[in-house]
Amino acid sequence: MADRVVPWNNLPTELLEAIGKRLKTKTDISRFRAICRSWRSSVPPFDQKQPRFPIRIMMKLHFPVNCFFLTITESIVYHLVPPPNINSDASASTSSTRGWVVRLREGESGETSMLHPLSSSFHIKRLPKSVFPKLLNLLEFQVFELAKTYTMYHFDQSVSSHRVAISLSPDWPAIMVVAAGKLYHGKLGPDIEMCTMVKDITSEFFEDVICFEGKFYAVCHNSTAVVVDPSLEMTLIASPRSPDHDSGVHCIKNLVESLGEILLVERYPNRMKQHRFVPVKFRVYKLNAVERKWVEMEGMSS
Image (tube, rainbow, N blue to C red):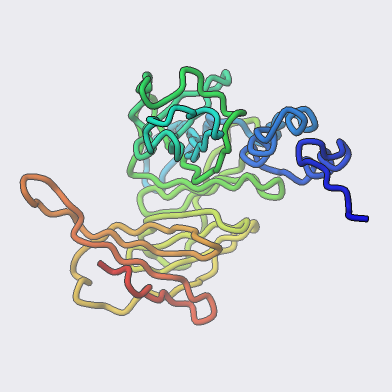
């Protein structure tokens, strides 16, 4: 006798609850609850146990200045895929049938604002009626989390000269800030914490920092890279790159995590072309942790 096939919307409640206990992020729980009503009722909404944003910290740079407060906001970039029945009109646009990329930020009182996916300062207040449904209910969409971004504010002005990375791990809830070329560490908690400078082993100018697998990784202007563990011990993981024909040109360096790898992205200065600025080029390197060096990725230098 053939095995009886149980429809996915009629799975046993105990099985759905067991799956729900293994979902750790807000996005995963939202995607699970968006499947159907029975799945939604089996798992409660995401329980925010981690520090809520915005987060406020206090800093004092290494040169003599007064202490100042910074506010850090979190925004999440999603890909929303509508169910087939939402766009039943055959003339529906291609963009609406494939979904949308949106950037959402939650305020202190729980209200949600929509931002431009590529800008934290551009708020979207009205959506095109010809493309978006009147009500954008996230529970009715397949939700894919693409990225999390953090923005620092001093009063109401964003601080673009600083870089920030956040660890929301329950084992080490922490923040790491790059300011004036130095690394500053602070604890995350209910109270405002003072960020203190991390003891440096490079004597170089830091440019960017990310959180990866529970540790903080930072890169200097000469491509030297370090990792900082929960004990705040700094370890060298990549030596400076050998000088090349672009060594005399300053480029902006960013660390990126992609498919379980750490990448170094170098963006060279803009130039004027047809009355507008365009990037000269990008270079992408992958970290070789064994040999402690950056390896340029082929086919991605232009």
